[in-house]
Length: 199
Image (cartoon, rainbow, N blue to C red; front, side, top):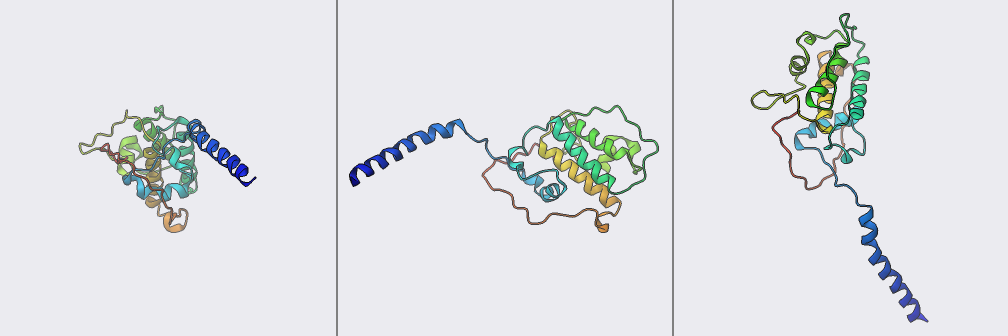
C-alpha cells in the first residue's frame, strides 16, 4: 500500500514538473527595468512627489506615453499651485507642441510654469528650463528636442523643475516640500545606458 501511495505521489510530482515549464512559458514576465545610475539621485524625491510608484520597474525605461505626460504635468501643476505664487497676468495658452519628444515634454513643463509670475519666462522654453538647471544638453549644448523620451528622462526633468522652482522661492525651508529617505532600489545586472544626455 505504501509503495502504491509513493508511486502515485511520484507520478503527480513528475507531472507537475513537466507542466511547470509549459505553464511558465505562457505567463512570462517582462524583464525588470531599473533606472540608469545618473537618475539615482532623483528617485527618492520623484517617489515622494508621486512621479513614480511601487511598480516603476515595469515602465521606467519604456517610452513615455501621453497619458503619463499628462499625469506628470498634473503633479507639477499641483506642486506649483501649493506655492501660491502670483498669477502671471500675461499668461496665455501658447501654441506649443506637447508630445512625448524631449521638446514636447519641455513645452508641457514650461506651460505649467507660465501660469505664474516667474523670472525668465520671457526667454522661452529652452532658456527658462536651462536657466533653472532643469535641462542639460550634450557636450556641444545640443538639446535634441526631437528625440523620443523615456519615462525616466521625463520624470527626472519634472522632478528637477519642481525642486528648482521651490528652491527659487525658498519654499523647501517653509516645509512645502519634503524629501523621501531610505528608498531602496531593486538590484539587477543591467547594462548602463548613457546616450550623452543627462536629461
